[in-house]
Length: 108
Image 1: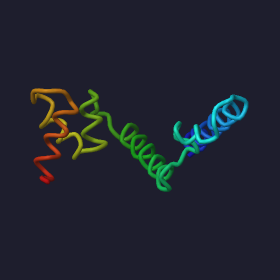
Image 2: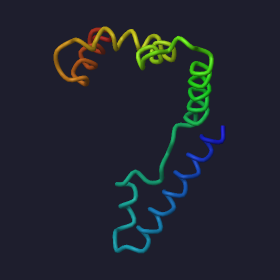
Image 3: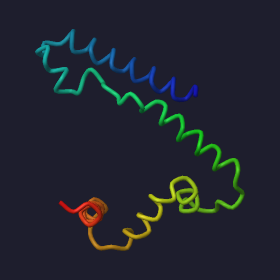
Image 4: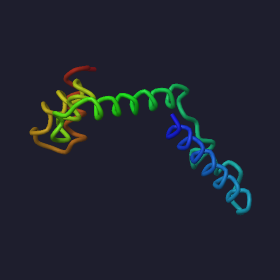
């Protein structure tokens, strides 16, 4: 839990530094929005991140059978691991393979 809170605090502090810099500079006020400021995080991001970190900790502490990153991937996110296994040997870049997979699963 503390890791997530520290991360959120560091984001807030960084955002404060950015606004301080923008205020001291000669840039127009609307330049902040061009930089994606203020930083708007989805409301469920912190709880989801915490849940994923807890799950990862549980997987790592509860298993002596994890020998490779693929084993960890499979234990942490089986569906994503299965999709990766289907796509990893396909030709093209990772992005192209994901787009092709998405188009096959969710045709327009």
